[in-house]
Amino acid sequence: MDSLPNRKETGAVRSGLDIFTDVPYSDGPVGLLTTAASLTRDGRTCYRALRDVGLRIATVFTPQFGYYGIGATREVIPDAEDGYVPIYRLDGGTEFPAPEELASLSMLIVDLQDVGVRFHPFLQTLHHALHTCVHADVPITVLDRPNPLRGNLVEGPLLSSELLPHYATSFGEIPLRHGLTLGETANWFNEVIGANLTVVRMEGWHRAMMYSDTGMPWTMPTPDLPTFESAVLYPATGLLECLPVSAGHGTTLPYQQLGAPYIDAEVLAGALNSLFLNGLSFTPTWFRPLAGNFAGQPCEGVRIHVADPRDLNVFELSLNLISVIRELYPDQAVWLLDGETIAFDVLVGTAQIREQLENGMTPERIVSDCALEASEFMAEAASYWLYE
Image (tube, one colour):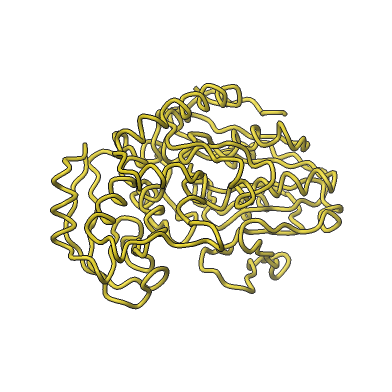
């Protein structure tokens, strides 16, 4: 495990890509796993920045939503030198080319803006990239970026062993909100995988920073996270889609609002506001999602307002949302399935949380019980930290 040293701090965060382009190192064709959302501080895409410093990019891979974040099946990158470069989309986040397809590369470079949540697909894509590079005997370099939700807070239960097959082999017992950067997660994964891994560290990032503190513009890593505010609420409202509830996909406020045709907006807003959750307020809203649950149908629900994302416990918020909706609408708000497994169990990482909710345990008690596991993970993960 190798991590390149930081340069002297300048007061503004520079990504691993910015650091790497100062002194690029490659002696042959490279593969690139990235999206158009991975930018330098001066606004160039990772692909363009690496071409500008002379790297020979032979192949471009992209996660499931596509290079441009619009899910197109046959994407290309216009290039003045080569005309265009084809993009190979890794559908589903868990597929990766066969090792022989990477054998001609001198290196695979990964530059993805993760969002700090276990069920976001970029972690699975990274995990499979590391495995494939081991079998292909190709070095892998991860250009690090901030964890948008900061790196000094861990929330939620650990992923239980019986649900590992829904993620990836040897994915590990990682909590819902894990507090690691993509480079730190790569180091953690690689303890088991054993790839020839280099992580190019950021400059100027500290664990207490939210993305809004970095001075870096937000560019949506996936099409349903257009704003930082959506990313803040993603680990909370993303879990709500395990019920017949829309998280506002295809609207202007994905993950910032939720609803369903059977919900009364004013009743739900009143019930949630009566909980007096710290730093949170809820207003009635009406919308028509374009994708996901109830696509194309008019929905009523609530918009979530966060006073300060630093004070937000997203796991506690999600459990309160689920509890209130299931109490108000017990006949409609039933658990959805992922194959033969309850979808909530898959995303939250264990069946225990659902069982506790069904048995009447309060969200506050559940969060308190999970806190010990989360703190133990944080203490263990600190050995992989690249930043204080």
